[in-house]
Length: 132
Image (cartoon, rainbow, N blue to C red):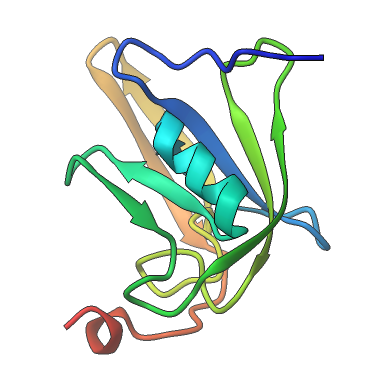
């Protein structure tokens, strides 16, 4: 069965990286068609940086690469899931997962939401040493 991935108007699709063994979601980024192709070709996670407007391989600078076991697409074909073996921390802040904070309380209105959070994840590297 062939499925066309539904990239948005900017040519991107949300890409969730999930630890293949534990099931923990380690990060969310965006992928372009080229990023998905490179991921499939190399077995290493590739994404598209919206802020830098460029293709990037996860871990190219930090060494914290994601070996991709499988790429899945959701039922609407508008999101992809990378099942990965994460080497080192996934988050640029040095944490194992980008989802290293738990929301304890929420205060908001039409202008936005503020969340009180606590850190629940472990920091596994010092980003100041890695991203000099």
